Length: 129
Image (cartoon, helix red, strand yellow):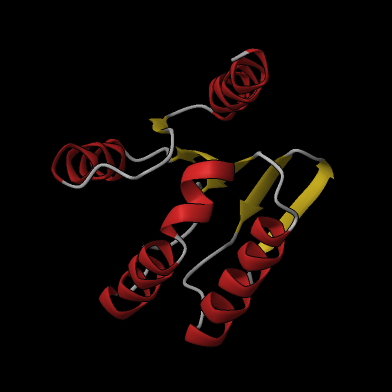
């Protein structure tokens, strides 16, 4: 299944998918993130994984390589919230962040509205700094 991006509330972008995406879908999704970063505007990405299947180890590697390749842009422009209804997924995401903190604000949530409120607050706070 392809990633579905909703940027109608820019600078807040929501990405969702059902099932397990193909490698081609992951590549296309990362290209879409490149386009957001190319705007050179601060934005929030809400990764809504509810109803999805975990990415393969190879796909997670693709995401990590993309994050490393775009570290400077991510640090300047990205705020990320990860939404999962699975406690194990949320705990794993949180645990990975303890050992490998991302270069941008990032937080995990069990509820979409809480994630959206946090992203909006983070984006507002960056404008006040």
